[in-house]
Image (tube, rainbow, N blue to C red; front, side, top):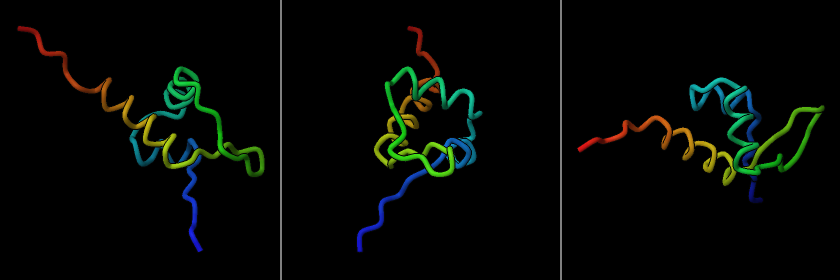
Length: 66
């Protein structure tokens, strides 16, 4: 059996050390919608979580000025 990993904003916030409100903003900017909703809690698949994480990493890299 192949299990699909899904994460809520709360779990992502802990793993990515980013406030839920910022994760929500990023998801909206990238056009990411939940892959499922359980008990009114949105959950996101691994590919979408990675897209959000990539955006956070790109924002946290210092700009190099030459």
